[in-house]
Length: 378
Image 1 (spheres, rainbow, N blue to C red):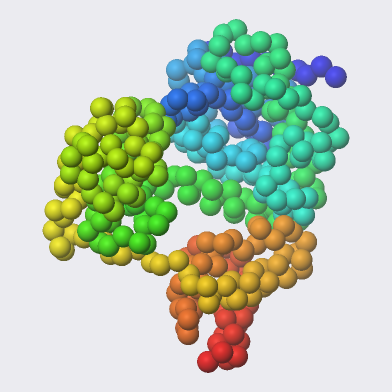
Image 2: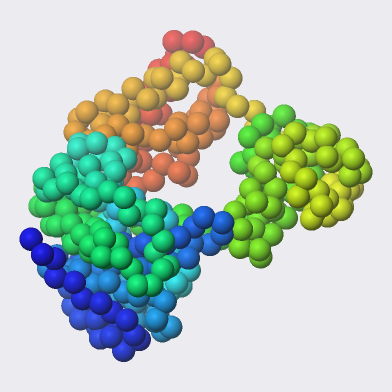
């Protein structure tokens, strides 16, 4: 069956379409972009479908994005995307606005017990019985003209995404539909939060092994790398590889020869940024005592593994009761934060990252499970 395709290639056409879309109950939205040697995605195409037509928006010929930003913010129009983290970045950078309310079909599939973290092709096949063509996901979306295969691929993606939504929505109770939108809201909130570059060191692998003065060096290195990736528009590891930051903070080389001996240190990095790295190391090492970061928490000890399993079982039981994917119910970060609040003897406090319906359904059961474990092993 031929797909109805309509191109949107100028500011006036985009404004007119956005005005029409704002009267709809939902739109399905997808993006195609190139991100090979850049920090920021370079958007090549946007696709929107109302379930009847695939609209292909050419970002290379449009300069005024305010109408699309207004559409993305319109509270009465549900925005349907699939596994949308990269799409959110594209839309935020292009329009300055994130889509809300957001319905992620990957999450919806998990809420219906169809599977967790389902790929789009498999979801379309399982829900619509359609085999999607392969092979265009990695093609050059910045070339013009786009090939017929690219156009067909992009149009099908958007149209079938709308059809998947139309098939899944009636299968979701109003409560679970609200849960999907709640998770969509959390995705948008997470993406929209400003990340302080000087806080990035907290997520460093093995950071807990470093003392406060070493962590001060690590803090300088992570912040500099992030800022340079933005400024140069290159991937972070093109500035300096992740695995080199920890040994730099741990051993603190003070000359270029010593710097060159650090594991995985690229000669290009030494040529381009060697002196800067040495200055960052010096600066971090000379941090005033009162400005040193606190030590990072140790990993949970092996003795906590029994409690981890016990809490997972609580989440598993709730997932079975609800008939949804267990990975959706209780995440590893929640379990770790909960245990860190009181291990080994309690009392435990529900973490901030256990929110919404999960907190309501699971909160007390998790605390009760930990309390009973404490009674068994005083």
